[in-house]
Every structure is written in structure tokens, then in C-alpha cells.
Image (cartoon, rainbow, N blue to C red; front, top):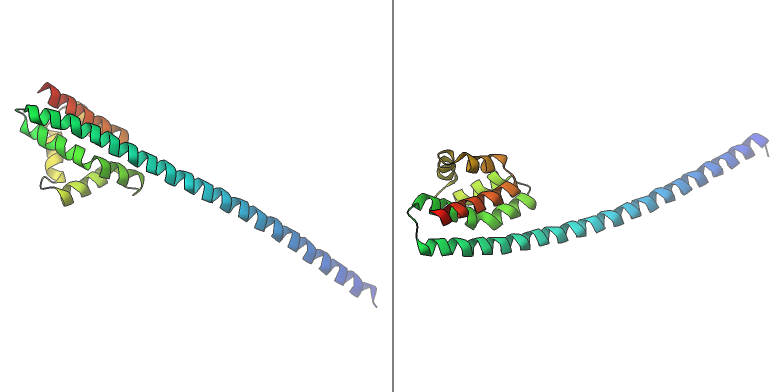
Length: 160
């Protein structure tokens, strides 16, 4: 046989072996990445479930507090109405903002327009006419500030 032919076959076998080894390394790396992705995905689902459970519990506590003030009575009917709306929407807003990938305003607007007779625009107009503190909480459009707005409105109900 010709030396050129033999060396070509040897080089071809070497290249095939090299490609096979590299392919196996990529396959192993892919398996490790998939396992890591699955682990992170499970942890994310778990943490999401925990956040939603905490939101339900927090909503329950806020609702109990709200009901105490409601039974006691207040002269500020608008404050009562809009605080009620915020607390009713609490779980849905947190769920949609964490799992549904919506902003707080989008989730609240959807809830207010579809589940109440108050509506988002009426709520927004109320906030425009209220204290700067509440407007700031609302303007930030974050979950933390939504929760704080609920608490501030409950505090205001307590004082009225």
C-alpha cells in the first residue's frame, strides 16, 4: 500500500476519534447542564409556592385587621372601599407579579376591572387625590411598595 494512503487513513481515524471524544464531552456537559437546570427549576417552583403561601397568610392577616376597622365603622367610605379593593386583590397581584410576569399595576388593573365594580381608573383617580405618601408607594410599581400601600391605608383606616 501506498504510504500516503495509509497516513491518510490514520489521520482520518485520529480525527474521527478526536471528534467522538469531543462529542462525548459535550454530551456529558449537556447532561450536567440539564440536571442543574432541573434542580434550579424545582427550587424556583418551591420558592414560588412559598411566596404564594406567605401572600395568602399575609392577606388573611390584613383582611382580619380590615374587618375589625370595618365593623368599628368609619366616616371615610372611599378609604374603606379602596382599602378593601387592595386587600381583595392582594393574593392575585402577588401571584401574577411573581409567577405571571406582570407588573403590580397590570395585575391590579386586571383584577379591578374584571372582578369588581370599582375599576382601575376609579382607584387611580382616588390615589391622585390622596396623600403624596400613598402616591409614591403606588408609583414605584413594586410588590414591596404594594404591600406597604395596603398597610398604610389600613393604618389610615385605624386613625379615621
